[in-house]
Image 1 (cartoon, rainbow, N blue to C red):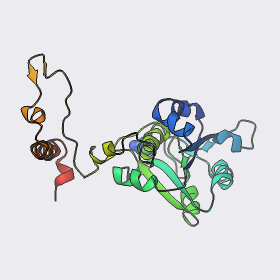
Image 2 (image 1 turned 60 degrees about the vertical axis):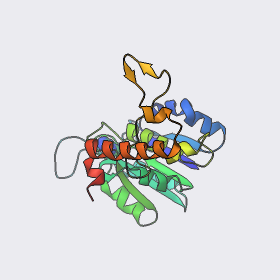
Image 3 (image 1 turned 60 degrees about the horizontal axis):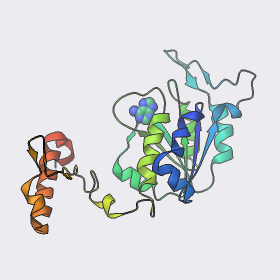
Length: 226
Ligand code: ADE
C-alpha cells in the first residue's frame, strides 16, 4: 500500500518511523511519503489560508495549493481521505475498507478546514471520504490521520505476527473485547477468574463471550441497540 500525507506540519508524522509502523515500512508493506502543503504555494509568504466568504471566525485553507499538490499525487486508483469533525465516523469497518485500497492520500486541514470545492472537485474523479475520529474537535487533521493510518496498516496481510490477534479484538465482531489476565494468579488480593485456569476451552470461550456482551451493554449500549 502506498500512503501520501499532505500537511503544513510534516514533522507530526516523524513518529511513523517508530513502533510497528516503522517495521511495516521496512518490510515494504507500506510506503509512506509526507508532503508539505507550503511547497505547493506560489507567493513569498507561502500562505495556505484566507478569511471565509460570508464572514465568521477563523481561516479557511485556500483551494489553489491543495489543487496543485493533489493533482501531483492522485493516481487513477487513489482514495482521498480528508479528516474533518464534520465527516463520517471512523470505525473498524472503515479501517478494514481502507486496508483494501492500493493508494491512500490524506489531506490534513487546519483552521476551519479546507475550501469545500477541493472535496467537491476531486469527488467527481476519485473516491473521496471526509472522516471524523469522533465527536470532538482537534486543532487539525494530523492526529486523526496518525490514528487512521495505525488502525489501517495493522490490518494489512503480513503486518501482525499472529493474525489471530486481529480476530478476537474489540470491534471485530461489533462488541468490545473481554478482559485479559496474565501471571501472577493472585495480585494485591485480586484473583484471576477461575474459569481461565480450568483448561476447559468451551467454558473459557463461553465466559469470554458473556464478558464481551456484558461489557458492551454496560460501556457502549449504542453498539448493541438492535
Ligand atoms: N479535525 C479536527 N477535528 C477532527 C476530528 N474530530 N476528526 C478528524 N479530523 C478532525
